[in-house]
Image 1 (tube, rainbow, N blue to C red):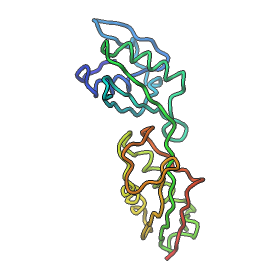
Image 2: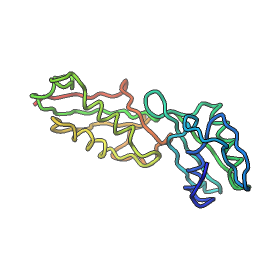
Image 3: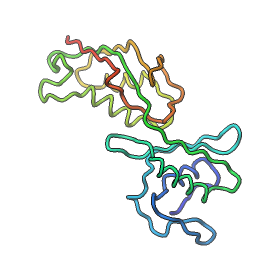
Length: 205
């Protein structure tokens, strides 16, 4: 593990998190904490953000790769990661580690589709695939971790699908709380579409 960023900075802590190897111990060489052997398979943290706490210290928000998109660390893995961070961080700097399940995005929307390309259920005539569902999922998975969420950018992603003529989102909520246009802070840092509480209607034209 070789960290090239300046010690003590946000990027330094981010690199420390991404280089964490779950289940491995660290050693001290030349006054530096290192892993004796690099093992990418144990580097479970795939997304990380660092923010300063007003009271001092840092808040580290992380997520790992799950079976279908990002996922939180288990309680045991979070504890191990916290022990690791406390060993490698600067002395006297308080650290808080956050790893939460994805926040749920619910949408009510009407999408106008080209009737020459789509069926009434939103599936494509030529192959039965559902590219609007794919576009929404792909956008949410690529959404920059722990940044403001703009509804307009999701709309853009859907409108980029060939055959989509228009999209009108009539209602949107995060974890059951309605919002318009923008979410300033996504608590977990990442989103998933709550299909059970979403209503997307397709109109052929």
